[in-house]
Length: 95
View 1 (cartoon, rainbow, N blue to C red):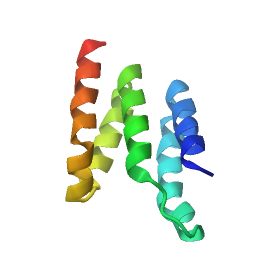
View 2 (view 1 turned 90 degrees about the vertical axis):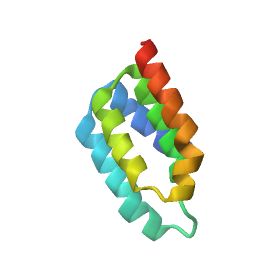
View 3 (view 1 turned 180 degrees about the horizontal axis):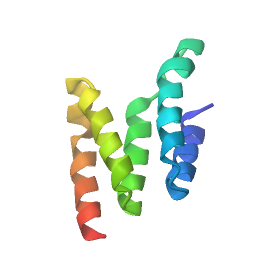
């Protein structure tokens, strides 16, 4: 499963407000997917796309979940994703 398929699956669950599946998909990606592949999944890219989509849709539960994931990233990833967080706050206030 590539990054775009993962993102589309997250978007599908967000559209259907299927929060349990979002949590399960994230857990599956972190545990199963990485251990069976030779390459690292691009979590930062997936995070950016899913976080902004959740902000556009106004899904506060998903946004809070994604912020918890953000808090667990390393310092370099946090610096790289900081503009995404700021833009997400702007989108959320605008809608």
